[in-house]
Amino acid sequence: MGTARRAAKGPVKPDEQERTTEVSAMRGDERSQEEVIEEFAHYVSPSRVATYRQMGFEMVPGRREGSRIWDWDGKRSFINLRSSGGVFNLGHRPQRIIEALRRALDEYDIGDHILMSGPRAALAHRLAELTPGDITYSYFAAGGGEAVDIALKLARAYTGRPGVISAAEGYHGHTGFALAATGESSEEFGPLAPGFRKVPFGDFEALEAAVDEQTAAVIMETIPATGGMLLPPVGYYSSLRRLCDERGAVLIMDEVQAGLGRTGRLWAIDEWDVVPDIMVLGKGMAGAIYPVAVACYRPHLQSYFDRNPFAHISTFGGSDLGCVVCLEMLDIITEPGFLEHVRSMGERFAAGFTELRQRHPDLVAEPRQRGLMIGFETTSPPCGPLLTAAMARHGMLSIFANFRPSTLQIMPPLTISAQEVDLVLEALDVSLTEVAGALAGLRQTGAR
Image (cartoon, rainbow, N blue to C red; front, top):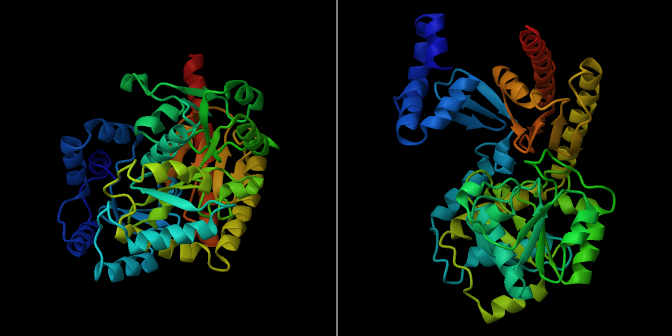
């Protein structure tokens, strides 16, 4: 994959060189993967390149299709188990999305965010039909962090209160308010926005103690992904809904990663039969092609925007082209059989995990799972990074949970096939054996 490994193997074989040349010609770009890596290091991020080199994962994505991506030279492919947090819910380069965008380009461009928009109106109408309860309005953004900022600005302005409560294990983005609500947000960017408090996810007593007469909003990822795909205790969200109602706080559910069919339901919060005041969506809204994010909210909150219709400005939020793409994405995921497929593939994974726990009892703990939102739990924090590296060696692109390194995040495209699920399970089996060997070696080294 990288220069060091290639040098160790000797000169590039003629058939490899021929394949690389052919791929470059198809792409119209004659740079080799190593040249791209060096350019990336020189002009984008030398530290990222150094990190990937240390991991032995010197791969630049080239061709991509369905559940797979190929390296720049076209020599290796990987099943994408990360899906960029749900951006690739429909896989890479979904043809229906591409065709919808091509048609839209005959008439539309980005559009002017200040003016009214036909595609934006159509998408907001469709979201009102699909979102839980009486959620009616949509305020669009270019990314999930911005959509979280919109939600928090609306909650503060509507209530006239400054306080925001979030989960210590939650992730909401890297923009202003979103960063302040994110667990383990870096103080190096400080001072962060005031008024934010964090409580352990799932601890209702701590939440109840934190929400007071100064609390504008409680914001939660429905299933905290970066926290390790944490699942709430029984009754947690219904109790949270009641608490917010009693104390006049706005309930915001961040479904940027968990929504849009990821759990086998259209919205993850439907698992707990709760209607939030605001629901934030992103990532998968793009259909893998054109970024869109949105804060969808209930009618009573519209009173603030009635007084201040231009209170939030987003140049690329709800672009005409993006809205057309998003409408096609919603058509796909609401077609008969789509969510059934997600649930079926989730059950196939679950059955495989049971076998893996039996085969590797010292390494595999109880997974946390809803549909294809999976936290593959191991028995110790070092296992996550080791398993990430081992899976890459076996053609699987995955990542451990940043706030819980013992967890391997598994979020494949929702279109993943049964055969691909089986390949993932086989790779996990082999990788776990390698991790066991690596841990044994570390223990022996420590004993010396």
